[in-house]
Length: 97
Image (cartoon, rainbow, N blue to C red):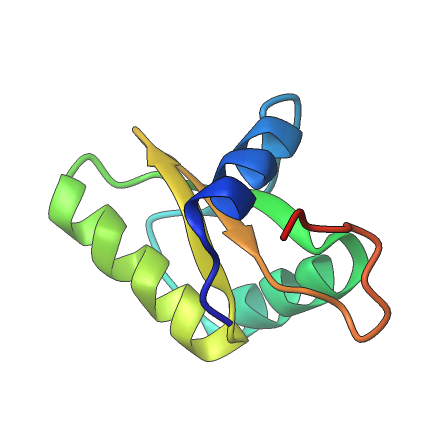
């Protein structure tokens, strides 16, 4: 599901007003958290995840782990916020070509 730069830019614009729906705490990534992210992506397609770690590399690794497990794509990372996208079976978001 590779996205081109125009599609990524479009999704970043849509994500701008969103609030984080999932927060990764000190316990890190658990099965419960992954199930919550998976459910949120199935419902919304585009979500923000807040990762509470102060270490930049750890935040990046946790984001990659979540993406790999949920078959999602990282759209943007700013500080402790990561924006994830995964199209639904019946997509609500119409991406530009």
